[in-house]
View (cartoon, helix red, strand yellow):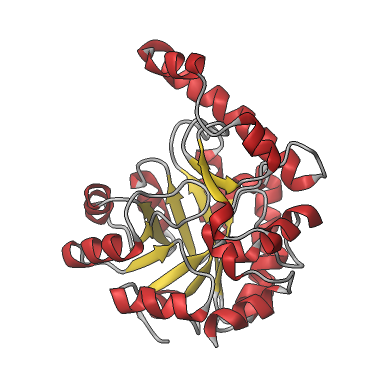
Length: 315
């Protein structure tokens, strides 16, 4: 399973444990590295820059040959912590950064100065060409089977489109829950995969047992798109609470989103409210169960250690 991704990150297997808001943590990434893959954590999982700095130091201590670690940065204006987070990552060092939701230009420039590779989330060819021109090291191709905020194209169509028109490696994100899925993505031309949802039901994940068990009990047919969480379509498990509140934006939300002056502020407020609701569901038992996940939970049959989940993906 040696590919351009394994060469880029000096890992044994072409797999990245995807960064998941509220879910990913040092313990998960440490076990991922020990298993020969890369692990990534959203920088926003840390409330302060001091906590982020401390996490990096632990991961540097825990790093083993054949594994690597990185962080995900939200690079648009909605993340007021972005510049400070980028500064800490560049000062302390990590193997790679994955950028999302904005221009990665500054991140690429600063990270490359200190030898950190930058991979960029993309959902279409237009943005892929743009980040390639800015010097990105690889593309994270977010397809329509990804959990959370997903793309619109199928894995095969998106990989082929990017592979045929870009010269940097394509890493497929979405729709991977077993070894056969990885083989399929590589056959389409991907150099590796980013896998998130199967790791929610890991012993090391710092979320409720209810959230983990939901990933076991529910399957691909139970994943729905909702506009009610962050204002942007997002995939969640179709729990009774999600069914109760519905998945479409209300008429007042649609009206506010059409107002040019208010749109940006409305989105910021909606995002903040949605993330707080998601955090409550992930961190404590509540009837308001908004659990983010993708259809790849179809292959999740029990709560396992990270090392066992990795083994199911590579053997």
